[in-house]
Length: 202
Image 1 (cartoon, rainbow, N blue to C red):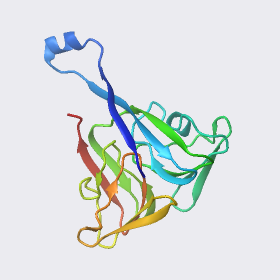
Image 2: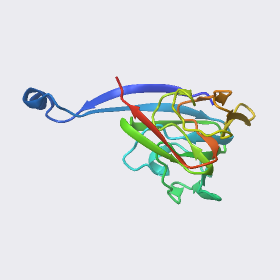
Image 3: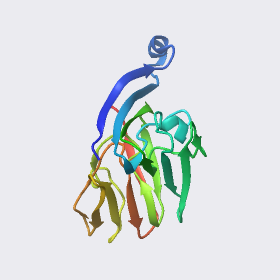
């Protein structure tokens, strides 16, 4: 999936920055921005790379087509939501989770929100789940410190037409595929683990 990333659109400082710095040199720095993610007509395996105030489908997918459908894996089957002027039902979707988006026509979704920073944990259950990086940073599974046991397998859904591209952990990822910004993937994990990262915008 090709994703055009436009980050660092704005930097917001906490109110009273000047006085806070003068008094204690401690202040809050939140980085907000947007990511444009093109979707093809048909199935797309995507994620929200930014944190929003709601982290629901209505807050994340801002310009869907009527009848577009989301399939969110719940561990055994899929929770399904369809856009009928609003997403019904309005399922939660946090950074680090992924969904299948069935689009009736090509579109570009603009994700708008805050970049998560600090110590981040993304739980990876045993067996199949759909996951993605919690931050808008592309990297290989190794570069993003994805936890893996021998035989764990990642399935990326890419290309036109879409097809699965597979990577298996055999001491190293083979091949070591890149998780693009806004892209999700299936992971079949032998045991549950936590995908932990310490991330700071420089």
